[in-house]
Length: 69
Image 1: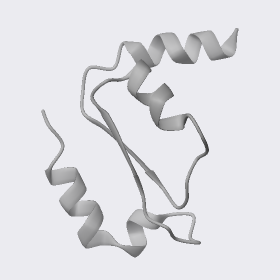
Image 2: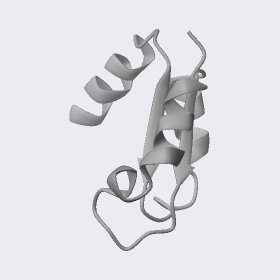
Image 3: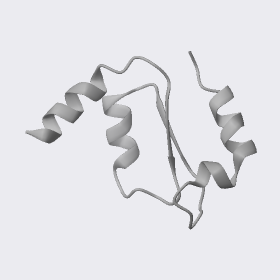
Image 4: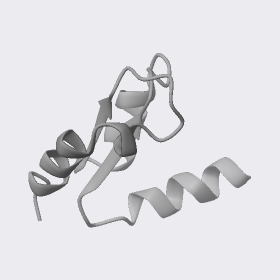
């Protein structure tokens, strides 16, 4: 039931969406994300840190600036 609620809410998102990961979230994640939110983009920073966007601020800033509105 919870999964259906999450998927339903995700389909309603109409703004740019950037998912940032320290390492790959696993097989099929990008496909699911694109199915639920076609405007979504994900990036993998290949970091051991929990907050990779704080480790590579210039990259994160570039990524945010290139999101389509």
